[in-house]
Length: 98
Image (cartoon, rainbow, N blue to C red; front, side, top):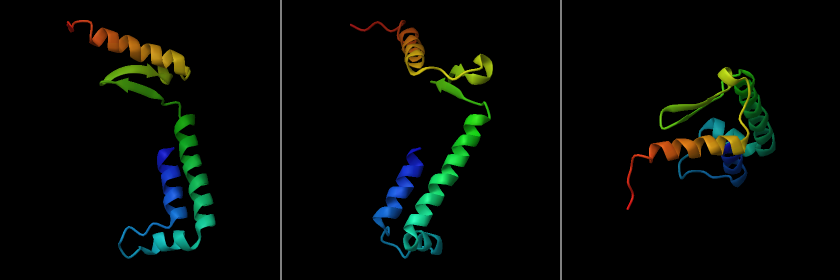
């Protein structure tokens, strides 16, 4: 995930935010290797929990586009792009563009 990679990059770069670091942030900077490995595994465990729960839904403009609970599977990327394209075509079908 983006948050996981961003946090690891911030720790490796040693960014101090121009403020006195908190004790947790200072510990992460002092133990970069251990903190990066720990973040990687903790975030992977959290991501795995969300994926294994079966609750995978996609909404486009507050309209449900896909639900793993209803279909029993995760969509293929091409299939998902076609669904979104169809929703965009239906959304702009009434708009007359000249």
